[in-house]
Length: 115
Image (cartoon, rainbow, N blue to C red):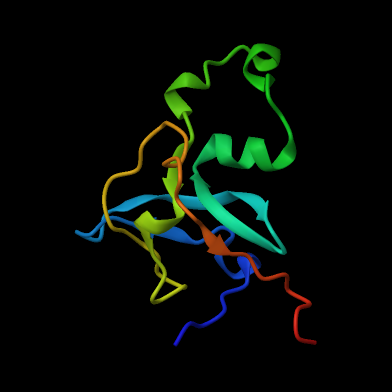
């Protein structure tokens, strides 16, 4: 049996690794439309996840800092254990590249669905 998790419940939630160490907060989602559904393909953690959410791409040049040291951690949808949405846990370390090609994704449910 699957259970719905609204994306806004995850936004800002601290992600930990399997040992319980903090990895970063969920700051942004990457979603794609596949047929009639929208699916989450990956989660972005950290400072530049916030900047991505705000649509800021070149703020580093404007304020004179390097964002390379704050590279977003991209976590493919299937690498995040959401069995307890208040405490998401990584199944394996995040990586800086794009989500795995061919991964189907998790269905994104709008907050107003079913109301």
